[in-house]
Image (cartoon, rainbow, N blue to C red):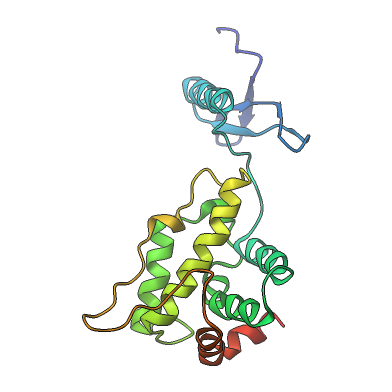
Length: 204
């Protein structure tokens, strides 16, 4: 039997032999990270190791993270609450409960563009737990979610911003535009909070 590379370990088991590949490196925050994965073949283990090493060299690798969607949103809201007006903070809080309801316990790194589209479809059709939402409520939710994910991407927790790949819902012809960025007016903030007051209570 050919000798295995030092970064691969042969692991006999009840279902047969698997091969565990591992990488060790120091993360930007100083933590020593040692991700590892098991594969059915040595070639698969070598491929994963080579890909991971290439990503590390290019600065594109993201370490595995257990951060959940709920934790990510709660941390983002806590940070924002100290930097924006209380009414704006309330609007952010009121916009995001559908995301937490649907994906709260899912690791943030597992969220895909399809997951985002599924939630938007549920809100548009009223098939989710929160019933039907209007476009003028869905788009602010999407904008806030995109901001949270953009921050995680900038921090190196996410390899890409999957939420940012989803386009806002288009307005019907003749309907005035609804702002979904950080420049919400006081009236728009109050309207959003009033429409989804129960969402704000979820984080109170």
